Image (tube, rainbow, N blue to C red):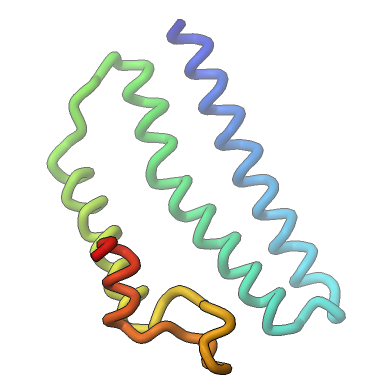
Length: 118
């Protein structure tokens, strides 16, 4: 089972990184793709490469070493990233919502109600 999981995670990692690099390369090489939407897409691809490159290699090492306990550093880093993303989502208004009187953003309190389900 270990070689199958190792191969699966390694192939998923390589496809993800290469696919995102191709997206970035295509957007950077074609001057017609230098629009705000494509800039956002290339930034999203870069963020995906960074997030995948911090988690998947650790998973691959854990599969090879039979380690099942995450290190304290990994747990704290994950907590920091999740809190940072939640704060960014709250601060910027987060979710886009259509049909609310012409406004494209959700108020922070409405966003918190949406997330917590209250």
